[in-house]
Image (tube, rainbow, N blue to C red):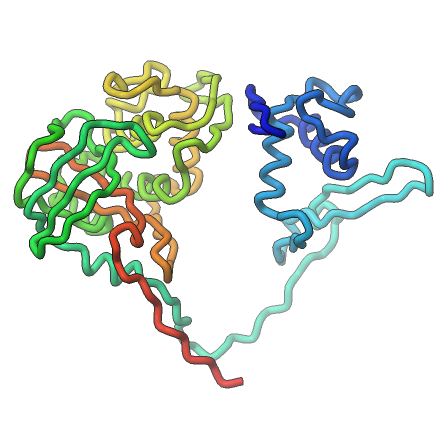
Length: 346
C-alpha cells in the first residue's frame, strides 16, 4: 500500500484490530490516520499497517469522500444496517455491526405483483462483436515474451488487410509456439465457441476452465495486491505481494493443464516465467473459483463503449500452443455502440 508517498508492505489476513484501527482513522481525521506510525493502536492486538491502509483505501475507492453509501436491499435481513449507540454526552459512541437478522427483526418483503411479461431490453455490443470476429487470419507473428501486463503480444493481419497489435496469454504449457515466426492461415474464435465446441482448439486441454480465465481477464490486473496467506491442499502459502504478469500466466496454465501445472507449492510449469509468486498464483486461482465455480458459466459484462475484454482464442495450427487475446473490444477498434433506447410511456 502507498501512504503519503511511502510504501507499506507486509499485508496479511485482516484482523478485527485492523478493522478497529481503520474506523478510528476514519473518524479521527489528522489524529489517528498515520498508518506508518500506527497511531491510536496501543490498545489493539498486533495491528498491521499494510492491512489498515488497504481497508482504508478500498473504502474510499468504493465510497469517495463526500458521497453517500446505500445499504443493499434485503428481504431476509442478511445485511448490516449500522446503529449508533451514544452512552452519554462524554463517553465514546459505538456502532453496532449486527445484521438485521441478528436483531431478531422479522425482515420480510411483500410478495410483488407480477408485471406484464415482457423481456427487458439489455443494450450491449458484446454479441455483435463476437459475431464479427474474423474467422481466418492471413498472418500472425508472436512477439518475444515481455511479461509487461501480459505474457506478450501478437501482430495479426486479417484477410481484409487490417492489422492489429494485441496483448495475449498462452493456453497450453506443453505445446510450443515460436516467437518471430509467421503463422499463416491461423484461425480465431470467440472463447464461447471453443467452450461449445472444444475441437476448434484441441490444444486447450480443459476448455471449460476458459470461464475462470475470462473472469480473471476482466477482474485481475498486473499490480493488484494479492491477499495471503493462501491455503492449498492443507498447506499454508505465505508471501503474497503485488500481482505480476508471470503470476497471471502461471494461473492460466494451472487452470488449463489440470493435474500438471496446478501444484502451487512446487511452482510447476513456471520455468519460463520471471519470479512467479506461489501465494499470488494461489490467490488468483482461488478468487476465480469463488467468482465462477467449476462447471458454471461466466458472462462477460455488457458494454456500450467497448471497455470489457471479450476473450478471443487464436489457433495457429493443430499442434502449436493456442493463445487468448486479452484486448478490450475498444482495442480491437470495433465501433461498439448501443441503440438509443426508446422511452417507455410516462
